[in-house]
Length: 135
Image 1 (tube, helix red, strand yellow):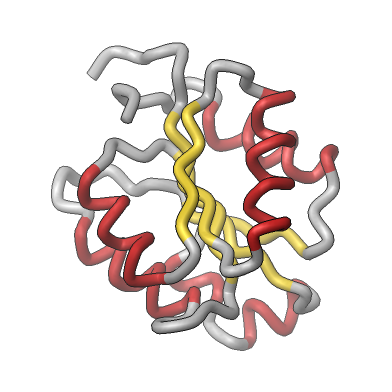
Image 2: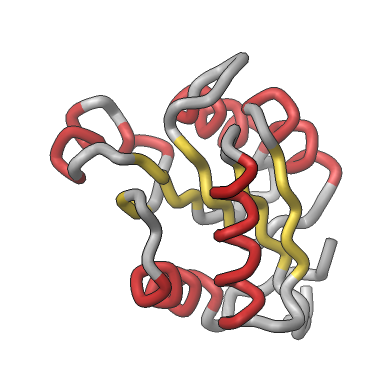
């Protein structure tokens, strides 16, 4: 697929203010980005299946299914051999996140509260040259 200027980012968090914060910060980094929001794991898996997603920000503590299970289900949907980067979001320390299994299906980690510099580092790390067709 040829790169596009409109990366598609899926933000998953059950707290509306966190979803808004992620969206606003991403808009500052990538004004043309398409940000899809999801409030739970079940809806997130469905949105992943329906869209070409370039990057995922995934809260660990979610209703329905937690972030670890959501990541596992998303990985099970990846059939084209491409691995969509999943960034775990949590108030956990990184060591606790890894101990709880976060590194198995996730590619990186951001500790809450999310800061602009940290989010920008992650977005640039994973979207540089890795942008699929937009949503």
